[in-house]
Length: 450
Image (cartoon, rainbow, N blue to C red; front, side):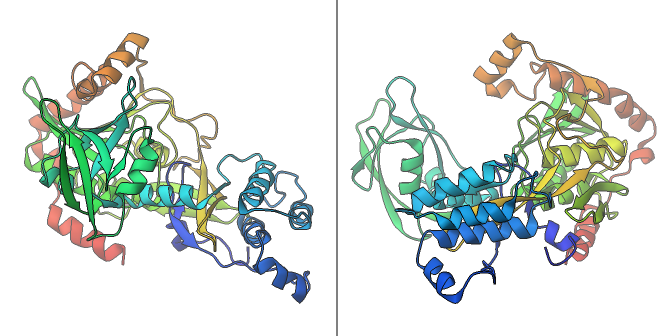
């Protein structure tokens, strides 16, 4: 790595395996190779191997490479002959496994495309979520995405997709069907639909750019108390704007406090976690990172919070990475009460690169610490109010997702109980929790991020 790790670069980082941010990096062939060898690499599967090796060599957080002789690994990779790209991909995956770091990983072109689409928070398609029915394997619509071509055309949950542009979906996986449905904005596609009680029919649609909802929210009435419930599924590129809209709408509806649900949230983009932390936290540290040469960078709030109403955060063992950065910032600054169970315990930052053949590489580049300096690796964050769901409670919430974030959800109920004292105090002294001017705060935030 030629330059010290600096904050602007961190904004392109990702924090969990299921969500990534793409950065493009050019491969630099080692000067130790002769021009003839360099030329031969450019037209062989070895080119991608060397491209990936160079990125890891330049950026990996551990300069000892977990006591692996990384230069010998390169020689081993380039000395072999590969009969196909897939064979080279397998060799690269095996080489990366020697680092004993599950977050430094290779993605083939299809995996890379799927993950970048997920983290971008948008896709080009018709806007339906599919599932394979357990008994028949038939493809059925889970739900149409709001404001999508599918929802506008009247596609309903439960509709079965029999064919895509005339191609039968019998025996087709959800992934393959989704790949066929996605496509260039403005292009046409025809789905053959079977709806209960009706004959099968063809439905022509035009693909569009669709913003995927990652934030869901509602105003919950609990006795005479109004709770703004917000569930964040992942930290995608659109998560911050959707979170801002949720806080604003719920505040306008008269929310007296908030419950932010991060249960099951695996993380995502680092910048999204920073932006969202700043919506809740007026001042103080958010996170500190340390790179491979020991350079430390502290990221702080910037006085652009859009609410100071009481807040509780729900977490569990699947709340990881960006979720833990946000949780740690709110906990250490005493901004929120944390409710639930121990979080996952991932304190590493990855940078993701596109490779020249359309594949991708995620590389761990830094370690992070909570504002109080806590290293949560393999330990996670212990909640202020520990509430473990019973097996029966988990099964009930899984079978009936509409119960999540209601009084039938024991962890949500505990969060509301933890907020009552602050809500009562605010009622007695409304000026103690003044609602900031949202428009002014938004303008300040936009200026600070330019």
